[in-house]
Length: 172
Length: 97
Image (cartoon, rainbow over all chains, first blue to last red; front, side, top):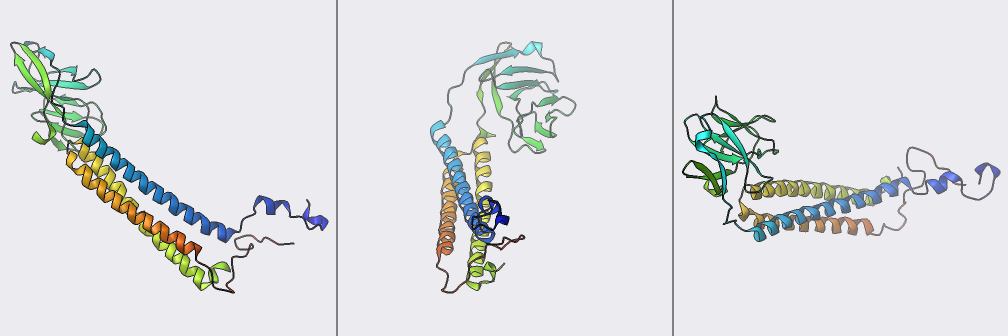
């Protein structure tokens, strides 16, 4: 199939590149448009998934109770780590410098880094991107976190500090 | 390119370019809507899910309409005597034997 031999057969390049360049570009843009529309449908599917989750999940009303720590064992400015409500939900119990207790999810609402308590400033800090949260209610003080830290509701029974649920987001 | 010198074809290409640009803009709005809805949902605001779903579905309708427009324009018959793109169009020369 050598074009030099003068035969009427197609040369190799014509078989390998058998499309017309201009028409090929024309069709590819249509295909690209189709791809964009399919991506648009993917966005709809994503929103539908969120809506389904919102409809089916509902508000959780019953929470387990878990003893977190003994109050007498935690001094002002110190913390205790625990898991609540499940074993894979890390939380932090803080005894603030003024003596109050507060507990929060330890996952930063930005990218889920672990927050730490800074007693000198009486706030929770995320070391990854310098997001700061209030130690009184988990409100965002500074940085990229878009939402407050989920706050754990605490009850005191004698010397025990008991986690009894999460503070609803709307109430924050 | 000889194919692009055809005015009818050039107009069609402009129409397709405009439709594609519109679709890309709509898609960007949809992406923003999805992330904002997810953010709101994670923050516990579940009431925004339904309006966001309706909005993004409407935007998808716009995209689908524009896509149909692109297909329709693409399939329009060229006027008689109009030249189509030659195989030699492009940076290289393809000699026919």
